[in-house]
Length: 67
Image (cartoon, rainbow, N blue to C red; front, side, top):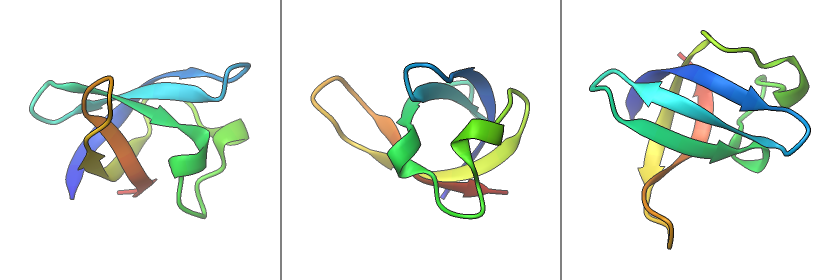
């Protein structure tokens, strides 16, 4: 698992970005959130853990959950 902080949430489009502890930034989609995380209540600055997953557009966050 990789730890990081939610940097930005684009609520009307259903995605956001997480900055990992190593400084890398990862895209995430609302479908990748693991309960009890609720996309509609997610805000920047929240600590999370996630798996890094390969995608056609580069690495992305999967299985995002509270840290």
